[in-house]
Every structure is written in C-alpha cells, then in structure tokens.
Length: 254
Image 1 (tube, one colour):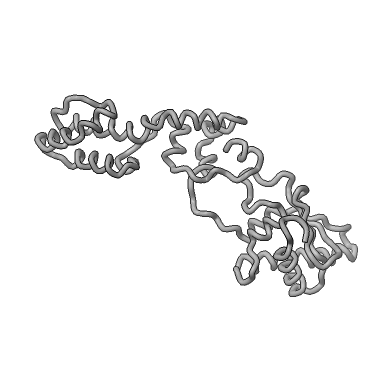
Image 2 (cartoon, helix red, strand yellow):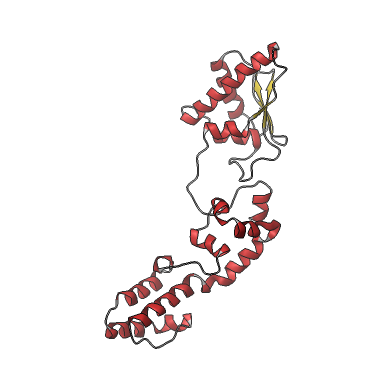
C-alpha cells in the first residue's frame, strides 16, 4: 500500500473509518454498532437492554463463554458496572482481538514514511484509505491532468491551428463526460497514461498535450504525452479520436 501511494499507483481506498482511525489513534472510540460479529453484537445488545439486576445477571449467565474469551470477568452489582462491562466487551471484540493485525498493518505502512504522514496529517491522508464510492472522472479533471500544451511559436500558422485543436479537445472531453458516445473519459485516460484513475500524488512525469499531423491520436504512456490530430473540423476530430482510441490494440499508440 505504501509503495503504491508513493510511486503513483492507486490508493488502497477500502478501509472503514474505524480501521483508519486505529492507524493514528491509540484507542479510537467504538460502540456496539462497530461489532461485526452478529451473534456477539446481539448478546451484548441484550445486556445493554437489561435494566433490572435480575435481568442483567440472567444475561451474564448466557454470556459466560463470551465474557471468558474476552477476559472481562468481574462482578456486576449495578447498571454502572454493566456499562463498564459492555464497553470492555465492545473494545475487546472491535479493537483488542485484532490489535496484532493492526500493528502489522502499521509496521507495513512505515515503509517510505507513509505512516508518519498519516500520524502528522490524518485528515488530509484519509481520502487515500477510507472507502468511498468511485468518483467518476470529469472533463475538468482530465483537462487539469493535461494542462501542459506544447504550442508552436505564438503568431505562427501552426499555433493558430493548434489553438483550434485545443478548443476541439475541450469540447471532446465535455462530450465524453455527457456519456453520449461509446468511449468514456476513463478509456481516454487509459489510452494516454495506462492508468484508469488519477494517482493520489498525480502523474510523474506530468502529462502533456502535443500535436500530430496524422489523422488519429498518438500516445506515449511512458512519457505521458498525448498527441492530438490537427484537424480543422470538430466532427472529424471527434470521430477520429473515438476511432483511434477505441481501436488501439492496448494503451499506447493507435
């Protein structure tokens, strides 16, 4: 995970907020909802619901095995004792039981200083680890990736053609975002960079746009260069971009 983040790979965005909190907090706050085992959670919930001392002791008798496994054996004389026992049980089954695994994960994330960054900037780093629904690429995101454009000298005929092609490029991204075509923005990103998501630390080297005299787009995924065909008509530009990218044998050159 650490190597992937540092070297521009996809982030491990699959953790629960609780697991991520365990990486930078010594004892994160937990509750009954965090107990993943349904049977254990139900037994603890019944203890929480027990109000009289008779009902509490009856439920404790049912839970003897569970309490013994958790190492939480103690006398319970009132509701305060019950609440402390409940919290101890929850912490055991949520945190203590998996503490060895969590420590192993933390040792792995020490590689390349990633854990240090999590400890120092937990809020900033959380988007790299906490699960969230996939964020769709947008035209603005792709345009920002290819913000470097290798124009010819200003005032030249080539520069005028290239300026027109860049306006076609922006319209093309908007059309792909609308989803009206067989191609997606992700397909375009794969063609140009070999990656289907923007790495958390950005691409290295920075992607750039250049211009080709041929009819179809060209891509150098190692240098992160996408070469756009210099075509005068937008509909032809769009058709050739779609054909070139859709029929490329793999990411790289059409």
